[in-house]
Length: 155
Length: 273
Image (cartoon, rainbow over all chains, first blue to last red; front, side, top):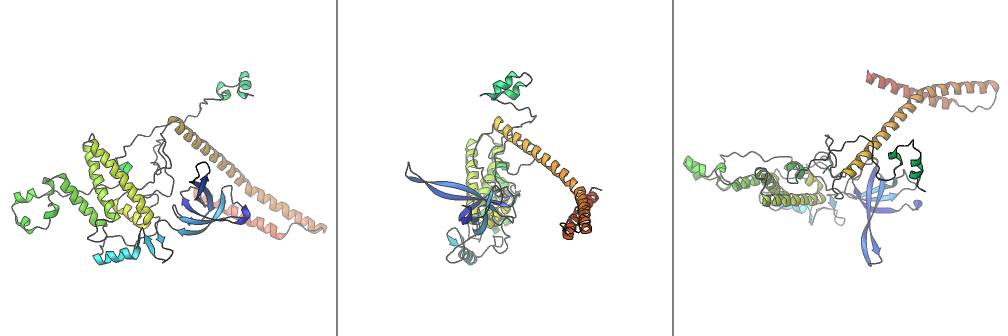
C-alpha cells in the first residue's frame, strides 16, 4: 500500500494544521441496491510546510513511502489549478468563466477602459485580505459562546 | 458486570463518581448564550462601510448638467434638489456613484462588479429604512433575499476570478465569510461539551509546557556532567592502553551543544531584565 506512491487529484480544504494541507478527494461510489453512483469524499493530509496550496486549489498529491506523522500520509506534487486563476490547458491563456481574459480586456479597451476599473497588472497576488475581509482560509462555525473576545470565524 | 453497582457499595465514593449516566460536570464553566443578531443587520450581512453622506443641495441625476436649471430661479432650483425629492431619487444617485467606482467602461452596466455594487447600495439603503420601520415585513424579506443573493454572487466571483473578488471586497467595504459546514441549533448541552473540551485541552497544553520546561532546565547540568565524565573516561582509556571508545569529536559535539544552550539562556535572562 505504502510503496506504490499513488498520485491523486483533489481539492484543498481549509485546515488549521501547520505544515499540512487537507485535501479532499471525490470519487463516485456505486450503490448496488439502487444501481446508482453517489459522491464519496475522502480526506488526506498532505505535507506542505510552505503552504503552497490555498483553499479551493486543485492539486496533485503523491503518497509518501512512509507516513510522516499519524495524519500526514501524502505530499503536494503540483498545484494544477489555483482557485480563481484558471488557465486554459489547450491555448495556455487565462480564462474567466466562458471568455478569455484578453478578450474581455480588448472589449474594455474598445469601449474606453475606466481608470478606476480593476487592472490585472496592478492587482497583488491572492491572500492579502486573509483574516481581515476574506475568511475562507479557515473553517467557520456557528457562534455558541460569548466570551467577550473577538471570534473572527464565528458566523 | 456493572462496575457502578460495585463501586456504589463502597460508601467512601461520592455518588457522582459512581453514576454511569447523566453525568454532571463539577467544573465551573460559565456558558453565555450569544445574543441573536438578525441576518439583516450589517454585522451579519458583512457590510463594514456605510453609505456616503449626500449633499441635499445636489440636483437630481438627470438634471445635473442642465444649463437652464442653473440659470433658473432659486424656488425652481429647490424643486430639483435631492433633499426635496423622493428617497428613490437619492438612492438612484448613490447607485450611479457606486457603479461609476467599479465599472469596467462607461457603458458597463451588466458585469458582475456592477451587479454587486448595485445590490450593495440597495442593501444599505434598505438596512437604514428597516432601522426606521422595523415592522415593515415585506422590506425585511426583500432585504434578506437580496443579501443572500449578493453572497451567492460573491461566491461565484471568488471561484471565477479571485483577485477581482478581493478587489471588490475592498471597494465595497465588505467581509466575506463562507457558510459553516453544517447547521445546528445552539444548545446548552453541546456548547458546554465544547467548552469543557477546550478547557481540558488547555490544561493538557499547560502541563505539557511545564514538563517541557522542567526537562529543558535539566539539559545544561546534564551536559556539563556528561562532558566531565567522557573526558575522564577517555583519559583513563589512554592511560591504561585499552581501546578508546570516546572520541574527541563526540566531546566537541557535546561542548558545542552546551555552548548553544548557555548562550540561549543568557539571551533569555537579558530579555527578562
